[in-house]
Image (cartoon, rainbow, N blue to C red; front, side):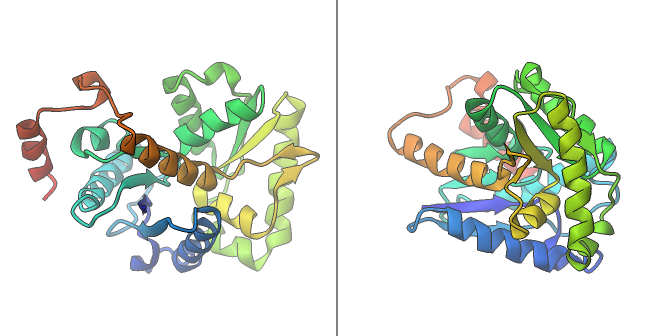
Length: 259
């Protein structure tokens, strides 16, 4: 099984994101550890990290287009599934229109898993804009009633490399915010964006005061493996356009828009 992990950042290709190499290595190392022995994973970024990608709608659309352009290579290169590891689940509808292989999304997968493990969950995010965005995703997925009000840490992309230079400070910052969500009833903690999630995984932060911290990256990889299994058994998306299935001629014309 081959899983295409698609990030919404440039990773090592972008000198403007100094955390890129460490983040990419962290994702590769951890995902290889949690995947099945016969699962092959590769992580792909986009050509550049647009300004304000975690805050502004205009940048959101640029990132979506770049991610779509990237994942359209997956089928031709023999991948069985695409797993989106960008917290905002970019291209949620579009990628399912354009790809025949399964596509899974990190926030959708982890929210549904959280609901199987606990009565209520909350996000701790790196900024307030991200917090509002994940609340919108929970509403889209029909899970808003299970979400407790979360916390934003007022971090920027400049903080991501600093987290590894002064880890105790950032772990404490996260823990304090997590305790405020626990006081509001959160029984499962989730982290966004993924660089913050991977930093906490690297530091071994698995719970706060007995409340688990869900590893969102593991959730999406396991969802990807499951979807490949189900795909092989004939369990697939519906054949209607509402399910993201398009006539083959329309699909090809749309794919050409991203070439």
